[in-house]
Length: 102
Image (cartoon, helix red, strand yellow):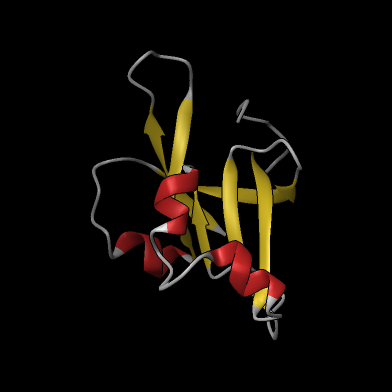
């Protein structure tokens, strides 16, 4: 999986945006490097992800809870209770083992 590595304004590393395969990430045409990332389930992770009940990888990942929730026609946690999928908390690791502190 790939994502844009966007430097944080305070200089404390990067945040990641537009997760997906390289072609999907490139479609957003941002002026930031595209990096290979690994997503790890982490109850305290900064990122929120949605996995449809019939899939094995996230279809949506956001680094902000409010922006994540706005992507749904209703409450994603209610949709999870209804069996439509799962909400996960994730941390992001750069492929190759380096962790970006997020």
